Length: 265
Image 1: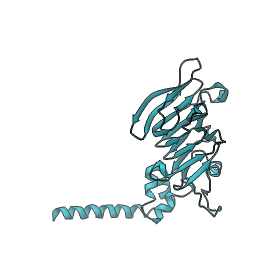
Image 2: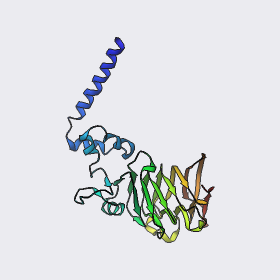
Image 3: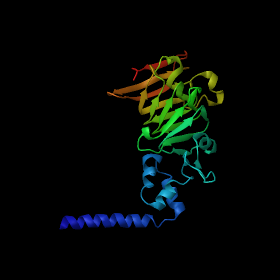
Image 4: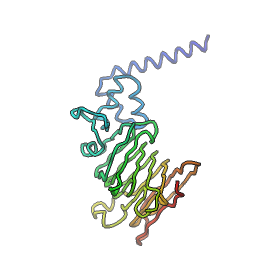
């Protein structure tokens, strides 16, 4: 009986706390949501109730990409990634709808952005790059990519030119047949002098990859300039290879390149 009373007191306290926070106006509550990490915290707040879903998905907090959108006048919602990237402000988060495939081709991202798949796993949100493209996404600024599958038939999934690129919990699928010199999951040229203006040479450049599966091809990463792979960890399972590594600038003055050898899936 005493245990039951304690249980009801806990439930009552949670209910009271929830009631108190709901007394805040929309602007104040949305400001609180803005401090949450987009995935999983802000994403989970959208599951609480209709009001929290409206505020957690508001365009002030992130933009959304949904291929099924019909009303282009709806603020903050776009039918494709290219339009969302073009409309985004530096520092925005773009949430890409799960289900189906989103076609991308040589999209240059020249401002700090975060692109996140809206599904429960990276398999739920797939970006497909056509064979005629050099890359799916080309990063010219500090960005983050999370919970996405990026698939390319030829070329590279991700082309990193400048800034700090973080890839977290993704799947990168590149061509597994013999044109290895044209097929890499990640290509980084951020250390090459010809692509970094002198005004930007003091900026931090590099690639960090966490818990990401790379499939197909004999190589996973190609770097040029003064970049080298550091702190590499690989976990091999029967069906997957998961990577933890960083690509960072070398202190040496000599130009060097590096790659990770992969068994073909």
